[in-house]
Image (cartoon, rainbow, N blue to C red; front, side):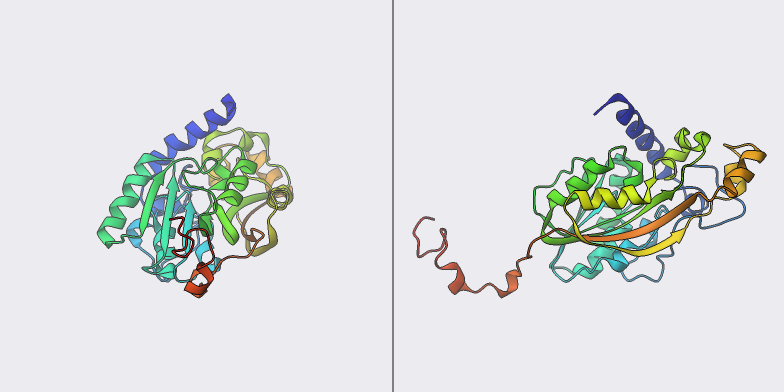
Length: 295
């Protein structure tokens, strides 16, 4: 990892340690909790989770930009991984879908978030939800573990997005899939926004072009790539004015540059094994069956 990538990671980790202690309203009325809250718009990026089954209010920090679990096609008994799990809300929603026989793993590189999520999980008494501290571009997970991967407004915070997508491919089982909500761009941001640390931690300056984002997914070998949902993100002028002059704000608003939240679905090639349909007779000729004597 080069020094620039590490510096960006350090910025995000520092700011999200503070964001973990902020209220939902403050986070939702700013750009991912990292910028000064707007007085004009309440929910700049986030979607409303409150009516979603499995929702836990204490775990909702207002930091997302979509509802990936809504589109994730999670089945009972699945193993689900949430990238950038924060205080655990998407994990708890996923746990509702996968049930007590499934497993949910949340990964986050901010110790404060991990502690908050574990506290929430313990209060709920969930024995099949765990939180692991680590980078999502180097996941603390073995190969071919997950049936489903979800993530909510996190990949834009990682400098090397191609590496994250490669890790997603590695960790998914053959035939597994992901549903990820993220911020992407169409057109170039003004330099004053691209170069600002707050706007990077605020899920904007680290976003890449929509075409490039989708191409990275295709290049890693994923199939059935689909945009499940897309919405425009409008940054209020009172936030933009902190970084741009009045003339620059007007120019930006008239530039045609688009900031979007997209929820993308894609599948790893292969056929997923349905363990519930494997019969004893199908195991008797395998190496480690009682018949073989090798065990």
